[in-house]
Amino acid sequence: MKEAELKEILDRELEKVKMEDRLKDKIRKGAVEKKPLGLRACIAVSAAVVVLGGTTAFAGYRMLNPVRINGEVLPELDSMEIVEMNEPEAMADENGLIDKDYKDYSRLKEELGTELLESGLSRDNPYMLCSIYTDPDSFAIITVDNYILGDTADYRYIEEESRYTYEHGEVYDSPVSLKADLILSELQMEIGWETEYLGMSRFVESYRSKQGYKVNLLEDMAEGVDPREYVSKKTAIFVAGGIRYTLSGRVPLEVMKEIVDSMG
Image (cartoon, rainbow, N blue to C red; front, side):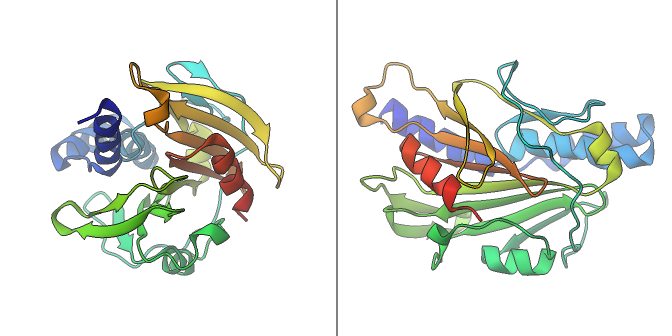
């Protein structure tokens, strides 16, 4: 197996891994004992982003919500804001956290009642895997795998792994995923929501999109791999309407910029 293919599999599995209940209980037990009740969700946010997004996030008393790569602070994005969201119709766990799956992005948007961006490039897509992880009082993390398919093909669902396999396209080496981070409370806003990418990632550039969003572009790096046989994973991060969006996939840089421009 080629190094690039192995890296893609590891990236995909990291993005889908769920936090073990023992770890969640340990984190939240400590939060209850040492922090006021209102801070429990903020600590849960940090833990969720560490595992679900393949990145690390940590709470600190800051009004800004910077993004870092291996300790380096990236150019400032537009400001995150408190947004309103309907509570998902699902049973919360013993810590008040909800983890719910949806059949498609439109159903998720309809239930939450929040103005979320979408792209015309994602229409008529039956292979999305949508979910929300939230403490409805403080934060929400929305993820949509296979959000934009491009010219990938032959999607097949693997039931035991809750994911799709696919064939690479000529332009899209992988589908593009979408993540949205929502701040729902004043307390979470005060604590902030920092995110750090670790490992083989590098900052590419910062620019203004067609809609005027400040966008940071990142890509992964693979040592010892022929660039002609490897399409690096591009990540675009921007804030719109107070919500932080992350698009990621193995596509050319200009294609990722076109996708950002399609979000409205």
